[in-house]
Image (cartoon, rainbow, N blue to C red; front, side, top):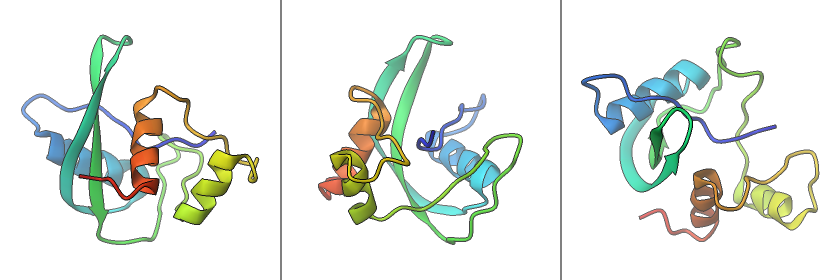
Length: 112
């Protein structure tokens, strides 16, 4: 199963710094500008998920095997095929999830 990268904000850390740190730790991707898009309550562990858009400063993925099994880049055309059920090796994010919201907005060019 693939999903969007996620993590927790450390005490004293800004959302933007947390996005940069988590993405770098999990994928080796450095992130420049970060913008907040949406939030979603998350019952476990009584958290609030923040959905953000970040600008990748490099494209070479180096995963941390303690964090992820795999990571990949996909194009909008590939995501459209996933959402339409044409491509079945990757399942789309569950409707109602913040990942679904973020991916739908990315497809619609509404990341603002």
